[in-house]
Image 1 (cartoon, rainbow, N blue to C red):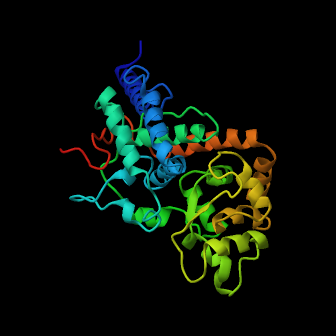
Image 2: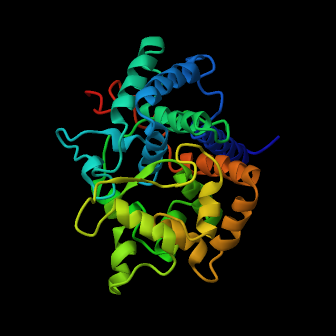
Image 3: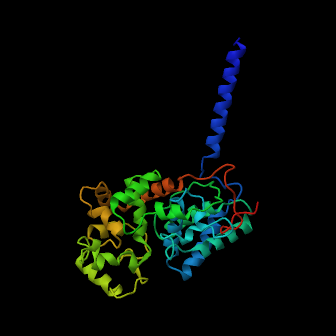
Length: 332
């Protein structure tokens, strides 16, 4: 028989192991998280997105972007959705988000519909993750299965949004650092950038490439000449900074791998796009070529990378809350 001291040590070790096991279970997202508590969740969210897309062809890209901009700031906790109120200063007014992210009204509609079927069950953070996945699939992209079980944060971080989110004006090294800071590698960077196969961008996000790249007084040398001429017609130097342009000029609303073939032809719209291919010696070049050569390879990597991004510091278990209104923290 074990001595009392040894028995006590064994019991402590067992208790520690059990605590670690329970913590791991609480922190684990699951593709079946709502199977019993809200089994019709996917169909409810899909119906709202389809209705929205009838009047807004940009909504798929916008919902994917919301998930991205949420996860890069303190993890996937729906902090981006919070409006300014009380102690909350919204992330929506941060420079990378202001006049850029959109679709909040559709998220509100999704939340209302979900609450009608499953009140108090589904977090806003999971709604963002699921809406992004459905938007990808509805636009013709891969149908990956998104893990769920996130809870909502109770704070916002506008300064974090200003610092953590990649900018369309940034060089590749800086963007790689921002992805690395949240545990994402170069394959994730290139794959997730492929979401720019749909959506639009305003002239001000790339006009420097057309007229005065890096203060040279000349266009970006990595920009295809004919493509540059077309963009200058849409974005004259004298104004028009808010005019929308297709991120993918070939298949604007179809989720495919044309984004990567565009990069190979120097027809990436944003500096941050084109540098994935035009930066000499960069590891991203071979990944772009791989995705350009095989849409199925891109689709597989994109699904994996969306799951990786959705796993950035989620709140699970008893952490956070299930907000009843995605724009506000629940009253204490």
